Each structure stands twice: as C-alpha cells, then as structure tokens.
Image 1 (cartoon, chains in turn blue, yellow):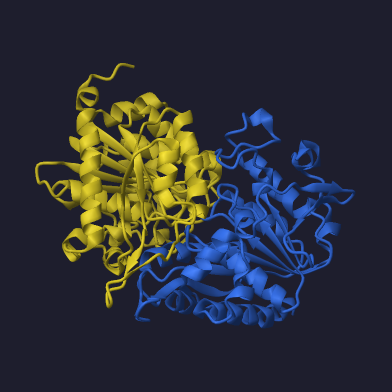
Image 2 (cartoon, each protein chain N blue to C red):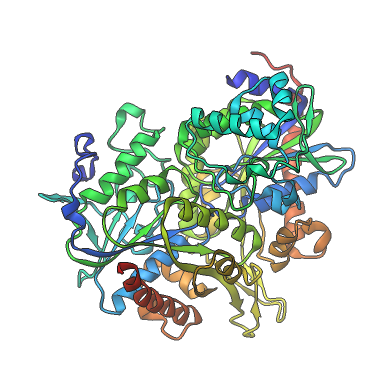
Length: 291
Length: 336
C-alpha cells in the first residue's frame, strides 16, 4: 500500500496526457446525499461495459467513498507506473477500471485521515488540499484508452464539486447526470445542484430519478415509498432531459452490497430495464456534446 | 469568535441534542424534525430545531416553512457582513444600497456566491430581538432556525469555501437568540469532511448532551456511520444511541414485510453490539413519512397509527430519558 501515498510534490504536476485517451467524461451529481449517486455511477459503468465500452470510474467522494465496496475492490492497492497511478481493474477482462479515494484511506472506519498531507494534522483538510487532491486524481491516474469516465462526486455543491469541475473542464466533453429521489424534499436540494451546473457552465445530460416506487415481492403491488414524480418535474423545471426512473429493488441493493454485477445477474428485474435504458440514452446523448 | 460565545448563547438551553450521520439521505432531517415535533407534543416543553446543513437545508420544507426563505434578508446581511445591529438597521432603510453593501461584503468574505435575486427585497420580515435573531415558530413551543432561511430562493446553490463556511456557521450559532428552551435539536450536514467535523467539534464543545446517530441497514451506509462514531469518540461527544431508519417495508396492501435495504452485515444491531453503543430503535419505511415531509406536516398527526409512528415515539422516549438522567449535569452552572 506504500504506493498509495499522496506525494505532496506531485499535486500540481498536470499531466493532460493521462486523460488524452478518455473520450467522454460524465459527472454524477446530486445536491443531496444518499439518493444513489454511487449506485447510479456503478450501474451506469456496468451497463456501458455490457454495451462493449471501456469504462473508468473515478470516485471523488472524500467523505464516504462507497464504490470500492460496490465493486468488491475494497482494500486493493493502487500501484504506480511512469505515468502515475494505475487504476484498479475490477473485472478480469480489464474493461472497468476504478480509482477511488477509498484506496487512500488508512482505515475504513476512520474519519478522513490521509496518508499524505500530515502537516494538516491528518484530520482537517483545507480547500487547497481538496483541490490539490482532486487535481491529482484527475491528472495522475493512468487511465489509458477509455470510452467513458464516470465521476462519482460527494453530495452538496461545495468545494469538492468546484474543484472537480475546474479540474476536469480542460479534458474534453463533460456532461453531468443529476440524480434525485422522487420526494419534494430531495428535489429541493437537487434544484440547487442544477443552479450550480448553470453557474459553472456545466452541461446537464439529464435527470435520473432513483428509488422511485417499490414493487412488493409478495403481492406485486407498487408503492411509492418516497412519493412520486419528482424527477420528471425537476427536469421540466430546469428544461433538461429526463432520462428515467430507477425503482427500488432489493436485488439491486443486495448486488451492490455484495459487489456483484447486477446488470449481468438480474436481467429480468425492473431496475435492470430502467438502468440499461438510461445507459442507452447516455450513449446517444453524449455525441451531441462533442458538437 | 470562540466556542465560549456559542456556549454562553446556549446557556438558556437545557438539553442539546445533535443528530448526526456519516452518510447523506439516511433520514437525518426527517428524524430531527420529528424528534422536535415529538418532544413538543408536551405543551409545557419548549423545543427548538436548528438546521446547520449548509449544502442541503431541508428543514424549512419539512417544517412547512419554505415561504420563509429570503425573509431573513437583514439577518443574513448581519450575519454575513458582521455589521453591528445599529449599522444593520441603517442598511435596512435602503434596500438597494444595502444590497450593494451586501454583495461587497460577500466578496470581501471570499464567498464564491452570486446573488441575483436580491432585488426582490419587498418581502423583508425581520425576526429580531435585542440579543440576536429569533427562531421562526411553527407552534407556540416549537421554534425553527435554518441556514435555509438565508437562501433567497430554493434554487440557490450555496457555493461556500470551506473556511468561510465554518465562519458563517459559527456566526450563525452565535447570533441566534434561543430564549428559554428545554430541548435544542441540531440537524447537521452529512459527511465526515473537515467542514462537517469542525461544526460538530464546535457544538460538542458547547456542552452537548449527546448525539443521536442515524443510519440505514446496508453496509455501505454503516461503513460511513462507523467513521462518524469514531469521530464522536475522538472529540469525546457522548452518543445517546443509533437509530436504524428505512428498516424494512410493510406493503400497505398485503401487509407483508420486505427488506428494501437489506442488512447484509447484520444492520445497525450488529454494529451497535460490536461497538458497544445503544441501539435506540428501528424505524420502518412508510410512504406516509415522505409524504408528510413533502407537505411540511407532522407525521405524528398525519399517520398516528403507523408502525413507524410507534417506533419514533419509543425512540423519542429513550432520548428524553437519556437527557433527564443528565438533568443534574445540565442544570449545573457552566464553568468557563
């Protein structure tokens, strides 16, 4: 794990070459926590992989990096090569690579304590350190050739987002997927995120509604556990495409808990069709960003 | 500005309860709101609810106070610019000039924040008393204060820089005039980032009775919550206990239970046993909860017979008991 150390000297060494082979960068955003950003990021990556694409995932959730767990890659060591960090391949075919801040945490139960910037006492990271870390993530990972890089962000519209958007901006077509749950309370937070996108000039590919409805496995009755219609309403309000609703699905949650490939294992579930259709729309929506 | 000032400000508050979670979206605000509603059901108990979630303040919506947004214009001016109360009254005379001043102050403070909708200064309603600004009351004995009141429109993104964010929260904590309050429930932002941790540390220093930690049953949530717990230990913040939210779902049609968020590693129960902290209870998913939150109404009134209501009530009682057992401590004059 020694290789995972953050070298303070390399923080600002911008290596645009490392992202030169990345065709599209997709940011997954939400103003609210716990709406399923990491779930959507993971499943989108898996769905794109099943479409034959080469996908990378960058997990910049500094507070709660959950993607390593969802792809059964926790505790993996990040190695270094001449071009920077080598992302972790999560499958044998090496079609999905992952770089997560989770790989840099000393102890998974610790509040953010970093190996690197010890001068900050380890605990309290200032904006400069955030920005430097994110810049390093963006520039120092040797992604190689990728069709899509999916970037999972922490909740909120604060420092990490600014830093992420600023760091990624020079590297080609950048679009954001905004995730919400159906409740008005969640939609309220996500509206602020859309304002953030507008203010930072970030193109919104579309809105995804997660946790929308639950079909009882006993009687098939569908209940809108978290109310309904929020995502569509939000998309309309903001004048951006609505990409679809992903229902609550215990099989999906369980797959993520156990780090299994939901897209491969449960092609009959309702969440499957929702997720693959969203992936299709992303595939077709992204070329427009190039023009 | 020191912890000392915040502590002094909170001297009129008997019990202070922090609601925490390492993870977002587990139901912190819903729980905070209903803890406040539940405690305030006893008409003789004065309850205050404070929302310091600067990125996604949802308490105004949940408490049915969304219209209050933007009304705290002058208070906001005061907080952000650090104007004295005399100066602030002066500034209030001329909205436009105050607006300019406000923007200038903003820039001086280094906040990357633009405020386009300040011109709508028609709806200025200042809730202010001699010693600070007062909470907004949803009931005679239930007051609410939220950073959300500082946003001029629900679309506003607060893009704060870390240190300024902390400064703003500290000022916010210092300037609210709580009055004589039995319980202060504090809803915090999610995460274990420095921003979050420093808020918690600030509050922890101001004699907090204890923290209630919210989680959902999945390991991906628990893994964040363990970090939060380890942080509480680090700053010696007492933990009242853990609440497992979204724990099972009972189909309204066939009444059979399903685990939407499966506790693959034993859920909060196993974690609490492991870490030797109390589990206060499990709250099942109930569509009524989300609906009442959207409507800004109390879930206790909307769905009095729901199993979730019963779970909430029993948890609130345990929190009350915890605070009462600390009564003598709480009543002690606070030494500097």
